[in-house]
Image 1 (cartoon, chains in turn blue, purple):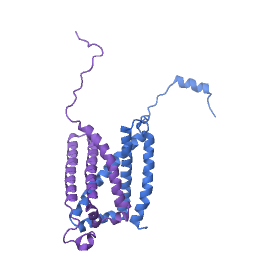
Image 2 (cartoon, each protein chain N blue to C red; image 1 turned 90 degrees about the vertical axis):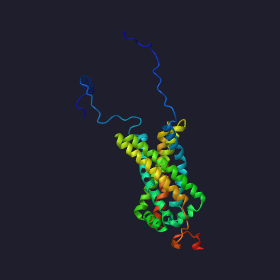
Image 3 (cartoon, helix red, strand yellow; image 1 turned 90 degrees about the horizontal axis):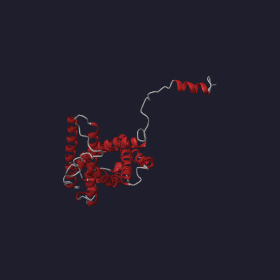
Image 4 (cartoon, rainbow over the protein chains, first blue to last red; image 1 turned 45 degrees about the vertical axis):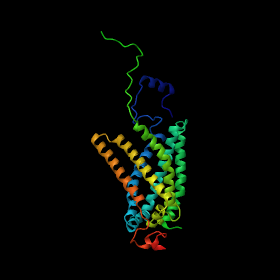
Length: 146
Length: 150
């Protein structure tokens, strides 16, 4: 039940206007939206893939040393923990690849910028399809469900 | 008396840097290599993780079988060079963005350059000096096409 009539409230607002400092900056077209998060995810996945690549070049180089050395190290990739890690790797690569194609379309497609937001959700959709195909297959491989 | 410039006097033209615009070509490289890497990496992931027994099938004989085929030699060479330079250039971007201390920045950029040169050299040497049937190795670890297994 209103304690004051609408007329009283309106008079009070005009009499003492209060300007409150926002706790955080107001949203913009970019901040906190699809554009920013795709940029954040692109950086994080890029760094993760880079460090995997450094290790992967070194472990593959063991083929030049001896079959035993290579087989011993590659055996680590077949354990359940690393098998789950490979799902994370494929997820990171898939997101970085699809979002990279989105960046190229934004840069070179005449209406790419206009459609960047919907393309972000297309990227997420295709990424989920990719993972829906890969994760069961990988779980069968590492836990021997075949 | 102070002279006031005529209105709409164009500002002094900024000096156009001479020579190759490396940042522009770096930007172009990320997009060009990115498109090729989508094909190369998804092909690599399919053959190594999805097809057949997946990751469980990977051992020396599996890799030797691939590297005995010129198709995979070219594929893996392109993968090595395009991916590592793409990754190193991306890391260079991050270092330029976040390393505010000039000394730290130079050390990090030097480390990226050095590791890239070392790994490209190592990887290329491995691919092109590789022997799928090394002498004196247990036959059961070698591919079936090696003379010891015939």
